[in-house]
Structures are given as C-alpha cells and as structure tokens.
Length: 94
Ligand SMILES: [Zn+2]
Image (cartoon, rainbow, N blue to C red; front, side, top):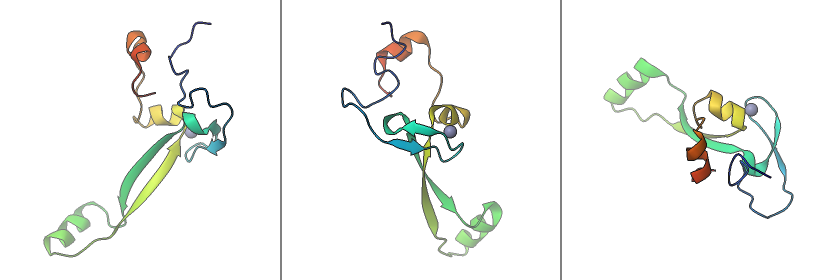
C-alpha cells in the first residue's frame, strides 16, 4: 500500500494499540503518538506593564503550560507545517 509518510503520521512504530488523548484546543480524541505537545511560558502580567515592572527589578512569576494539539490544530497554530511530497518522505519530524 502506498503511504503518504514513512511513519504513517505517527511515532508508535510497530507497538500496536495505544491510548487516546484529547486535543486541548478542539477536543478531538487522537492517538497518543499523533499528538503534538507544545510547552509555552505564560506570564500573568501582559506586555508594557511587565516590561516596566522588570525595569524596576520586580520578579514576575511565569507558569509553564503544556498543551496537547491534534494535527489540524497544530497546523492551524503554525506549530507544524504542511510539507512538500519529497520532504514528507525524508521524514525527520514525524
Ligand atoms: Zn485539535
């Protein structure tokens, strides 16, 4: 069977079945190996105010947020990109 990607879009290999994970954006249930985990630092204080407080030497706590995104949400937010045919076949990312 011809396949679009060498890994068939997953990273489970020949492992067999695996658990499902819910996308944090759209709520779709996706196999664990298809999900993209994105970790971002989120500050509670925004923009100009944060810059001004930092200038005064104030410590601003930042929290780390990890999100599970399905493929379509990851592409929508620019985490993953649509790749050309030959680039897909080389496949390092997935
Ligand atoms: Zn999603």
